[in-house]
Length: 178
Image (cartoon, rainbow, N blue to C red; front, side):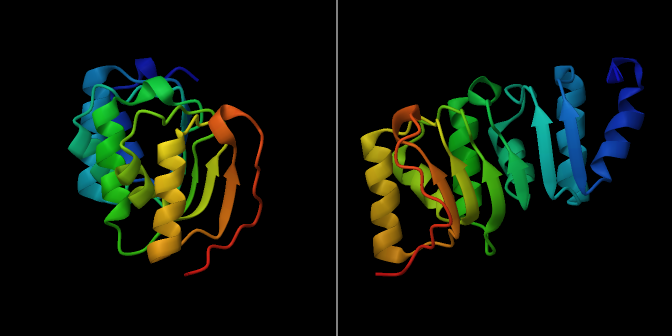
């Protein structure tokens, strides 16, 4: 279904009232800004699976506010869908949540350019993570596991691979406080 022909105000109002959005493709920049402004105001969205969305036109703070409220998110294959500053703001916002996010899929999304401490603080506040093929650096992995061992985490399940390979997959890993 091509949504380009739908009136943007009608479409964004409809989407902003939903709890779950599952889409493929992207919107025009102006429509994307309008949608996220409405999503921020409505505060209803909790589940987002938007394949091939291009979020780069959005202010990092606006994007982080909306996306960090989610319980479930799939950002697989999203390397070029976010700017580095958007990723940083998003991980900071996730870290600041009182309750952890339930599930995030980062499969095949390169996260190697996110500041290790910011990435780690966000990741430990998610219950189920897919970090396969994310090309994390040794410093990021070290920071992540150090933070878990020092202060604990809310992670219950972790799918993980080292530098994009499928080595070291961990299933149903339960973090323990040290």
